[in-house]
Image (tube, rainbow, N blue to C red; front, side):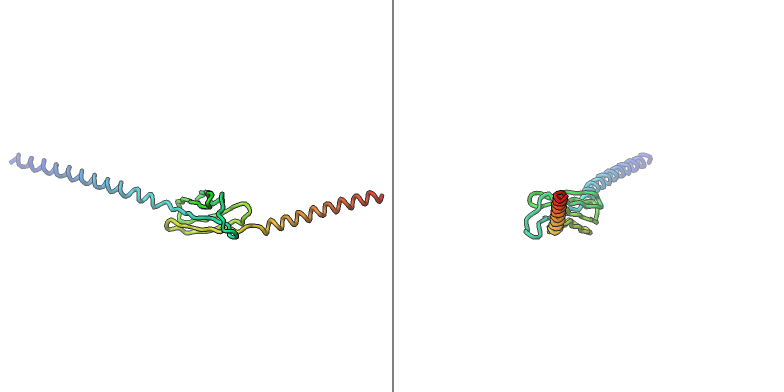
Length: 153
């Protein structure tokens, strides 16, 4: 009788060890299967092209900066950019010399394509040139007046 109980105890122990090994292997497999998917879901990419609104030409070396995550990039020779972010909200600033700055707030749920057309800042440059020319004209007039005054004395 004692041998019978020892046999049952050993068989239950064998079953428990087999069951535990199976559980450990399946749970480990599921964890390794699900972890990469959870980490990939945290990254969101914004990509697109930036061009000149007046000519339609692609703009190279435009600076794109997200003020929330402090991550930035620049466009390539085709005007293409790609920005990979960790957060769901993005406050993007597009800057380029000779063009008006462009700011966009975007709430992201998945990878997004964003096309941007930047406007030239010609009006500001023309106004600056006009004021510089007026200032230069005033200087030359003042110098001519001074020369005439010296001649008269």
